[in-house]
Length: 506
Image (cartoon, rainbow, N blue to C red; front, side, top):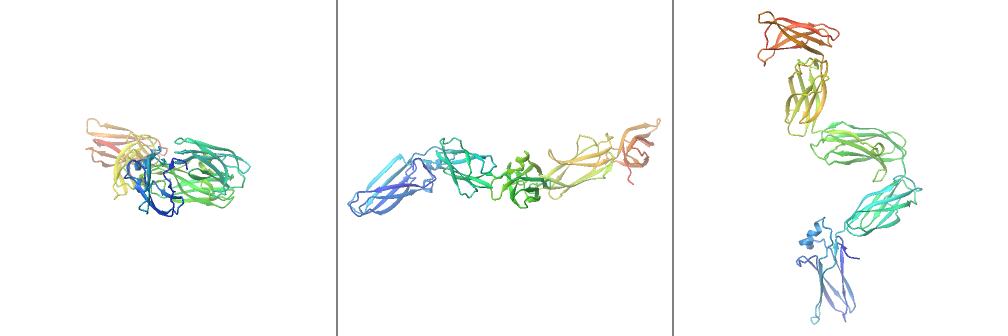
């Protein structure tokens, strides 16, 4: 072997004994240290019988053993950023005969022998082009290599990952510490295959898939359900597949916590030439609790037994399938009652909360029919004991005279948890007038009414202190059948600080 030696491998010291004139028992003592501190060392002893001949004694030494891990050498060994050659090792050999009249022999070396290196070798961006083909095509293989030492990198090809392997050729990696791309061009495969493989061999060895024989695959109806949930909600994914031969189908899901795709497992498709629905149940798109964000997914198609796919749904379409949405708070059973009325009607809103948070404040906002402005209607607190939150006696903007569906939504901070339709505003009011009767303290109250419901009874409601609303039990009938504006008058009424109107329930 040529220095520097790989510090990760056992290094053998050879001690040659010669010159013994007759058979004699000797003790050979080898002391090895990696650095100037001689207390960081290891001593190995062996007894031999020279028998009057030359004898070579071998001492295997592992520089990663515990005796060497302290001091400067230990720091160099553990620091991944230190890639320089280590040249501070030393050794000492002492040979002692059992003959008391024979002087001990000693030799030592402090010149840094052997020099040591931490061998790091990685392969990146390996590929074969084209990825699909037959044994009648020519291929190009390439791999990017980064190593701390020079190396000869060999390419071998085979009909499967288990071989048998055929040598293609060797390329020299000559730039330690610098990434270098090696290529093998115009490679022909002299064997039949479905999914071939290739092996890159240097100081390390790795096997990769490719090329593969083309397989026609069709798919449709990829889906995930439910479309939103908590981070630990079990989701079900499915896809319909039809292929010309038996293959494996894998699901890949975006982990919103770690920001990478994770494999949710593979399933075997065997109903060749027929559509088959494949389902992955109870998949979690997040590895941490209380995470939130939009996940997505795609499917991979494999030859059976192959580690790498020959195609994916992303490669075929250029996009991922969206969903599900992971939320810190999930909403269920949202309601507003009554389901219809006017802007003066008092509505009750409720929603059921699912969350792993110990507590949170949920805000209710409403918008008028055909409106884009959201108005805060108050906050309710979830504390774990009350999973259903309620907002009572909520009225909408009295200025609006639009008919149609209002909207409401719930927020956690600035995050909209859900937007919903309701209530239906089917009664509108406008042009409210106060008409004093002469010099009296009596008034006529007028308002124009329009509704998509005919035959309504409208009641005057008032407050004199701005706090408590009272029903007047003064009823006027709205009788239009064509959603027209109709003026209603409440004559000779007492003064009220504020008035409004509402539909009287039957």
